[in-house]
Image (cartoon, rainbow, N blue to C red; front, side):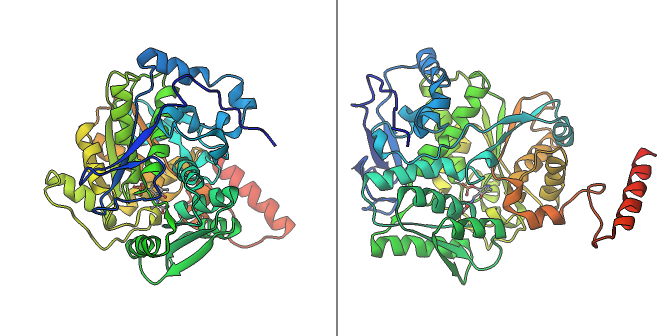
Length: 442
Ligand code: F0G
């Protein structure tokens, strides 16, 4: 077993954080077991004492950690989340950290995807390369670390599937019982299989995601179970590192746009907070614009954007991109702040547009789950509308792996990539191969 060897830095031991309610201003200690404000139920945010190093010195510190320890150190030393620990949870002691490790996901470019989107170049930040195959692991390592710090007796979440798989994996590692609430039907088999295999207690609720979240909040309140949905402020801290890592991969040169799929809006909120902090600390000198993309059947935030968020909206959600089938997003206010701060944009795309994008991402050998492809579909829409220029630098975040939803991948497969429907005999198989070869060489 590897011994935690987090490299101490002088400021780390005394660098503490405060948890503050965005609605009523109440402050809590960074060891709080509350996921929402005990006074008013509002959303909490973690504020760190700024690290001593700033600008180039802080960039150098993060870059230095990409050295030998990032291969040979403890899980936390190898993690693409804890590499940025001053901005995640600086007070966590090495023995408290629950890390797989996670993060260190690739930034890839494929011409076919760029040309589909109408851009000269487009990069894909593939968060499906995390241990449970979605970006949720970045928030979950922070949330389970906090669960261990507060001695949580159990952890719980509501989920469209990915959060539950990630929670199940990290709770298993931490040795803390996990309860997940998922909507009946509409959660992909891959995600259910992961959740059960990792050993979580799963409850399928008669209702949709929004009903599950309401019940999870109530149950955690009544039963003292630690709630780790993305309204949990420590989840947000971990998810910020998607942005920090992609900026680091770009040599701390900001792209013009970062596009992501948006459902419950936890990730949009995390991206906004990451960019605000990265700019304030001098890690970057220009703030990229965020593009949050919703499925048209689950697009209250896109509707809100069209009237400058005059009112909070909720809808009854329906989309085949089941991961983002959410009608009443919990992190609404934080996400509004993220869009305003980055002069960002919110757009809705149809399921047909999402699946068209997915086919292109899949067919170039990268692949992603349906909801993830929204971030490519949304870029294409804004290029068509002239909001994004064809030579602007854009990063689309692919939030989950293709194998999360194999049924959707089979249903969306491209012409030319299909096999025979029925099992064939040896001779039929040879005949089939010949026919395919001669038709493709024509
Ligand atoms: N992409 C994928 C693959 C997701 O699983 C989710 C959310 C999102 C995008 C949207 O992120 O909610 O922060 O706006 N999945 C949650 C879950 C709801 O339970 O797994 P968000």
